Length: 521
Ligand SMILES: Cc1cc2nc3c(=O)[nH]c(=O)nc-3n(C[C@H](O)[C@H](O)[C@H](O)COP(=O)(O)O)c2cc1C
Image (tube, rainbow, N blue to C red; front, top):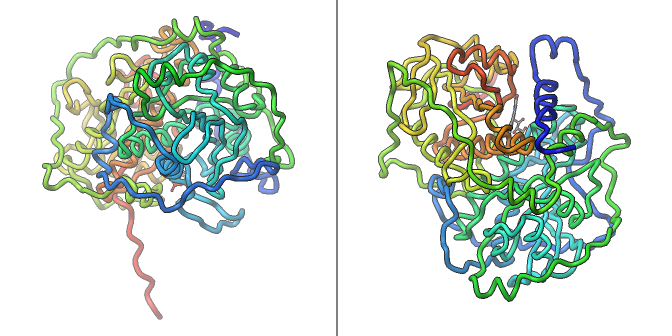
């Protein structure tokens, strides 16, 4: 399969759309006895415990999540404490609840169905407190498992065709996706969820790295087979999705320290089976294969300028976004906000948020995600459309966010709570929220530019912006939740403006309903 044959991405996207018809005609029942294990466990590898009480950064969440380009050009080397902080606040367990189907271990970032199919690995040279190696992170006991001893940074640099941030990074975190852990519930739609759930995790990862004073960015251009071999993945079950270089060695050091790529023999490491039985969804394996990059020349050609999107005619009525004045900006630290975050389960339909709060969220979340596929820095693939129900300072209605002007353009005025409920798969959450944010993208142009790999890019970018929105909302003591949607109905609702775009992601923001204290009889 070939990345340029974009028929594959269209086939997957069209084949996994939700519609009222598809939901009615393809009901799916959860087999609780076959529920997958939420952790990857290597029973024969001695865990290396990570330090638990690492020093907090003390950096305000709203400033940590606003970082759009990696900072600090000088040398910045993570140590074991930094790595422990980054891994824990990206993928660590933050809450635990008993559920009829068993215990649920909730993690630092939101994830569809709380199924946590994204695994993290670290490829590092010698760091203070950690020897060079390829490691897997296990959130269950906050530990690393050494898969390969030695410095394999040269292998990763080669796989990315010497992507500069990665070639200079003392350590790189790799996100993988495990199909079955999410497909148990979501079947073939899991490939979309790989992007969403890796994205929300990446929002945390980028924010906590920035707060730790370490540059980090998302690298999506790499030779898949080389990275999968390095991690010894069984690619029918788990695949590498993106790399995140952390920190920077100085130019002088990196030349002498980047080792030549080493041979990576198969390890055949035993892992505990996720379920008694696993179901394979061939459409996802095909989609992944078709979006894989085969050699360094292809990676080098793939990286580069973002597509240029035609701009729409300005609407008659546009409202400028005005964020909170500095003295009113909440200063809770990024760690406090990540620990507090959790998807809102019921919004208060009688409550409203202010335009300043919404503006602050947009300001933090839309400055651009640092990624090798977004050039120049600040470019974006997703467009944001809103249904406003109750935002003080905005008429209820449908809006388009014009990023270059930082305005919300009114597309149609009206009360659309019932429509929002329908678009969000007939759930009450989008109807009761104060505002729903829909991510729509011009897939035709994106796939033309990036091939099938553009499908990974647009889903992951949406997840990362969505993850930033979650954090920016919780930093202001508001609530948020990701949601799923009826694809074509979303486009119809925002058309003609959204004609020819595709629905990618949905998130609702509002005030959580405070449960009344139980009255004693
Ligand atoms: C992309 C995305 C889509 C989601 N879709 C829904 C949804 O349709 N309905 C819902 O009730 N929750 C949805 N959620 C919320 C998840 O169920 C929630 O993140 C998960 O249970 C973990 O809980 P936490 O976010 O409180 O940590 C979604 C979350 C994400 C990230």
